[in-house]
Length: 334
Image (cartoon, rainbow, N blue to C red; front, side, top):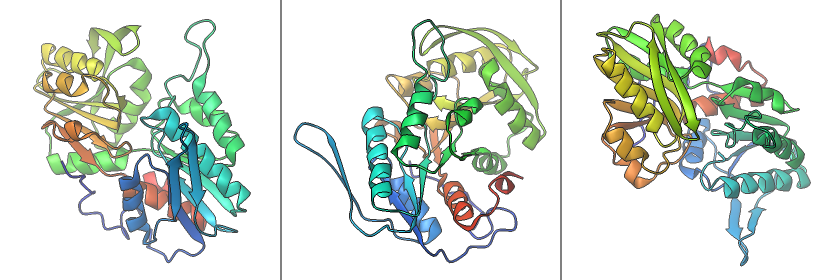
C-alpha cells in the first residue's frame, strides 16, 4: 500500500503562519534505517540528502563515512532506532560522532521512532532503565538537540540533558479522520497510561473518551477486564503510540465490540509489527489500523488490507525548518 501524504495541506500552508523558505547552511543526512522517509523529508525541504556511506566490516562492525564537507553546517541526522534496533542505534551514534569530529556547526538527531522507550522505569528489581541509557549515549555521541515523535512516556524528555522537541502525530491523524467522516466517535485509550494522549486527541475532535482496564501478565500479553466509558453503538477509535504484536490491540477491539461498539478503528504512531501482528489484525474486529511511516514496514505488512500508512515527512520537515530558523515548534500544534 503506498504511503498517503496529508491531502489538502500544501507544504507552504500546512501549519499556521508558515511560509516555505529558502534554506541556507542546512544539511540533511540519513542512516540506513528509513531512507524512504528521509527522502520524503528532503523533498519537503527542497534539499538533497547529504552523501553518507554506511557499511559493515567483515566482522559485522558498523562503518560510516560522511562523504562531503559539513564544517559549520546545521546538520540534521534522520535515523529511527527501529529493527534491527541495535544496528540502527549504533549507526546513529557513529553518524553523530563523525559529524562532531568533522566540526559540524550544530548537530540534531531526528529520531522518528525512539527505541527502548518502553523501558522507561524499573518494573522489577535489578533491571536497567534502558531509555535513560540510550539518551545518555545519544548525548555523549555529539547530538546537541533531538527531534522525536510520540515518545512512549512523556518523562523520557527529561532523560536528555539537551533540548528535545517532542512532536505529535495528531495533525496527521486529524487529517485522516476528517477524510473518513466517521460518525459518533469515542476515543479509546487501550490502557490507563495512555489516558493523557487520548484526552488530548478527543479534545481536538470534540469527542468523549473511554479507557480499557487491563492487566499485563507478561511482555506483549494483556488481559482486558473492563471498558470504562460509553462505547455502545458508537465508532470506537483506539489511539496508541506503538503497535508491536497487535495481541493487545486485538483484545481491546474484541472487548469494545462486546460492549457494543458499532465499528472499531486504531490510530497508532509507530508500527513495529512483530511476530504474528498481521494475523492478529486480520483476525480481529478492527476495520482499519492507521500507522505513520516512522518505521519502514515489511512487504507482508504493507499488503494487509486493514493497514493504512500516513506520512510524517511534512511534520518532521516543518520541525527541521523551524529549528533551523529559530521559530516556535509548539506553534505547529496550535
